[in-house]
Length: 266
Ligand SMILES: [Zn+2]
Image (cartoon, rainbow, N blue to C red; front, side, top):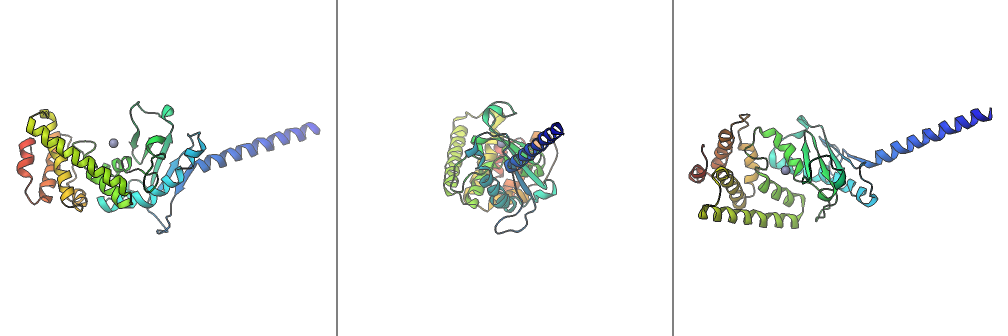
């Protein structure tokens, strides 16, 4: 009898331990599906912080999740016009400590089909005017809708700068503008000196063009996504051509000569 009672006690305590573990794990996975000003949002954001051991870092997972669901998601929805819920009803971030990141060293984050794996230092631990947020890996997921790209970070400079501005991260926006202008200056100097390798010339001209169009009118960044033809051709000249035609249309026909001087096809 006594043995049976002890056995029962053991089972009960094992069960409650399991329940406690599940509860603790659930707290480590933050899910945001409503926002203060929006009772329902089309994409549910999940941030899995169960791989983190530091409690203070874990506490940043909720503000990060809320920024993604209630700010960044909407900003990119407006910029790109893309309805992410069509392919991704749920977007999941999984956060890791640097030494446990399941991807090659040197990567800070890796975009997946409907989410991203991220090192804590580059995601939840980022400090900004609005707290921790991500405008990089989520943009890779949005851009999956564009078809074949000439470069994995095409349109990233203007899109991320504008996203920082629209989320309210003024300082981040100012820094992004400084970087964009420095890159443009580098390209101008590179072409003048002839130091840009032939295989990089078209991409350099494209990145220069998108940055200059954005600096001319911030609304042009929305046009990049709306005017680009979707295409699946893997041929590089064709991918570059699709982007060139879009840049030139937005510029009112003034960029064609510059782009053609550095790209094989238009
Ligand atoms: Zn990237």
